[in-house]
Each structure stands twice: as C-alpha cells, then as structure tokens.
Length: 170
Image (cartoon, rainbow, N blue to C red; front, top):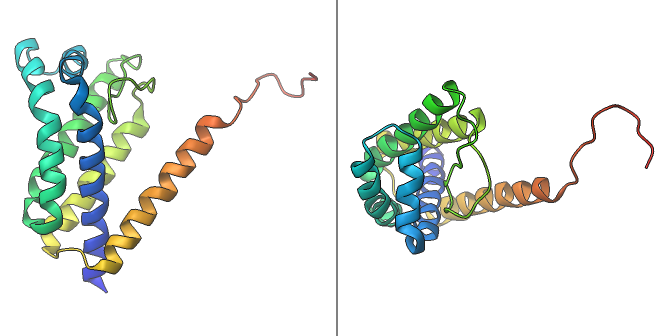
C-alpha cells in the first residue's frame, strides 16, 4: 500500500513538472523576464534560467516516471520556487505573476503559491525516499487527483466575485 502512495506522489509531481514546463516552452524569453522580476538571482542568470528551466521541467517530469530517484532534483526545484515566491511575498511584492503554468496567466503570487510548492516538494521527497515507479493504479489515481484539482480551480475561477458590504440588493 505504501508503494501506491509513493507512486501517486511521483505521478502528481511528474505531471505538474511536465505541464508547467510544456506550457512555458513557447515563451522562453518572456519567462526569463518574469524570473528577473523576482529579483532573487542576477538578471543575466534569470534570463538564462528562462530558457533552461522549462525544458528541464519537461525532461525531469518524464524521467521521474521511470527513475524516481531523480525526484531529488524535483525537491530542489519546488523548494526553490517556494523560497523565491515566499521572499517576494514577505517583501510585499504580491503584484508579481506566478508564471507557474505559463507566462500568460494573470495569477499573482501569494502564500497559497508558497504552500503549493512546499506540498509538491514534500511529495517529491516522498518519491525520492520511496524509490518506487508508479503502478498503473497509482498513475490513474495521481492523474485523477490532478484533474479534480484542476476542475476545482476552474470552477473557482468562473465563480462571480463576492460583493463586500453584506446584503446588497441588485
């Protein structure tokens, strides 16, 4: 049973990396500009990271499904993302776009992004320590879990904003 849990953690991390990297591939220079805006690493290095990071995410996501020991690299990536976002939230720079799943998104950074990356780092750690390739059932559960999360996020994005001020009549 523990190997199924490790497999699920592996699939979730792998698919998140695959999707995030693949979506960014068409906009590498813009992604580099967004990394620069975080002001965590020097501008020149940030621009290079914009070109290098998305292909690494894709390759790592694919590789983790067959070589779970590579999850150590995913732990590093997710923890780095959590720290970069966290530092900027602490600085009050919550107007920065997250660019987690592409450069065209309008989502700005928040503590929720820090928590999400920390959870992914934890799942990658479980994968690294567990060293199990995902079984078919683990793959199905992992994919289903991500689909439910994506549907919930889409539902939340479509909901009308709550009006402040109590009971207002239209």
